Image (cartoon, rainbow, N blue to C red; front, side):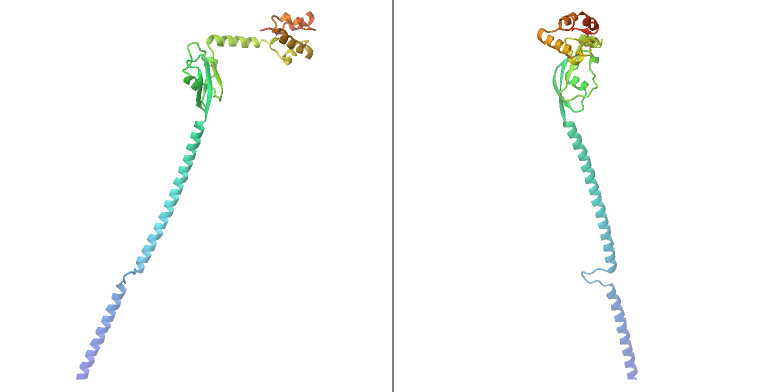
Length: 225
């Protein structure tokens, strides 16, 4: 009988050992030693790291775009300021309230210079100047009075009558007259230099070679002023 009991005890002990081994094995699978991470956690951390890298790349690209846009805007602003910093000086005179030299930005127009000069006086002729004209550096803007503008128009009309002023005409202009060649043109200019201006058109007969016959051809084409 004793051997049978002994066998039963031995079998129970073996079964207990097997159960303990199974339990220990399961517990080992669930245990994580300090400093170690579960394989699933490694995958999760790796995925998070990938997303962080992707976000960093997008942020860097966004920052680059912002820098390029800022640089482009700054370049345009600098160019605009540089253009606006160029100045020009003009002399405003005549029928204005405050004649003088004024500085304006490049690209300014006549009316802006007139505003700086206090505007036109009541006697000024507003149509005697193109107020929309662009200014140039060193330009003189003379505003005429109404009477001065009328005199100027009269003078311009007289100059357009087709007659040659023998007191101011050069050699080329004189040679456009009938019967006047190189020699006579030079004689007319020499006479003016020695004797002054002609007082009347008949005085041209004082020039050698110009007598009544030649004068008859000239009298409708010349004038003195």
